[in-house]
Image (cartoon, one colour):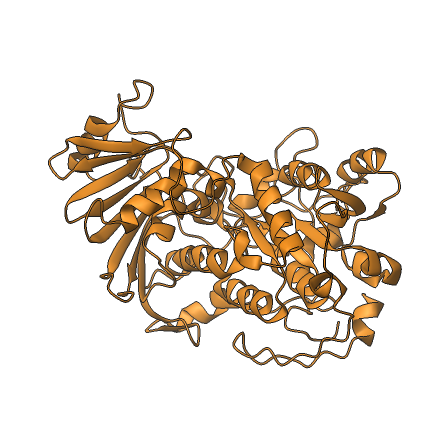
Length: 483
């Protein structure tokens, strides 16, 4: 249990809309003025897998002073690289270290989805800047809360959807907002996920197994409900949960929509200034309590935004029982291919992409990140395109990919301007929060009207358990409660 958190005088929060906690830690990191050559100090929570490159890239700009990973091998590899850093398997011990917390300016958080919100909230309450891998958080409640904490504390935040740095994406956002394809009322996004075990192959837990010597299982579980470790049929180190295979389990991951919507829907979401949907519905196959479905088509209705009309967004994942991949209609597939000038992608519809349909034309992106976008007329004639060689005219130029996201984040920290980080939580929490609502519709099998103020799903009483879940004792500090 985190003794330092026990001593902290938090005021318990009732809802995500109430931020009435007391900050008792010194506001060192937010209030500090950095010089251009000042070295910041960073700690990494989750430093294997994607977390490995995240902390490495952060280290190009900051000094690493803390490392956490539940896997002894992952942690050991990074401690060899930074032997002076404090290394732990339970991230709460980083927050318990008073000397470390005086030193550290920022955290990277690159864990399974169920462990994103808690360390991010704790870090921001300590006035530390945070970089959190996508999806920002597992539930809409967590996303909403992180956005509000970031806004109140003034810390600099960034979500790890590296396509946000692409010049082609940024210019496409500008073109759509300039009216290149007219008024937009329809979006389609599809993905090659899942690429990990889930339904229909896996729909129940595997038998209990001894916890491997290299794994701190209790720290892996974190706030999730207690369950025994299981390894499953895989040989070698990779089990059914740890490492990458957690994505297909509801307890730890958010499935295909959580993994990829923050990438593939990013361009359209930004261009149309979307926030939260007003209505969500879904059809899915092989729905079960343990793992994500074998296929799903989720429909989101977004309300009007100022002069912008309502928008319907369609998300497609997986394959039907007959083996057919879910995609937009054949008519739109033909139109997309007709304006794609790349012979590597214009023979058949790509496995991951997006389509934005307007009153005067449409935009088609044949990649995960929205970095390349083709624009055409409604009859399927090409108009223009954007790619990595295109420069945005109003938005800042980055174009440095994953490293560029860290660069932008650090620039924001040194300037004391959270808005300089293009995927800051004021944007990212809506993007991630909107799409994880799709999982609520999938799991309940019922459509609902969504209230973004109360986070209630009208007409679907089964939804509440998936909007917010109870954290395990000892890890229940998300809302400022004592551990």
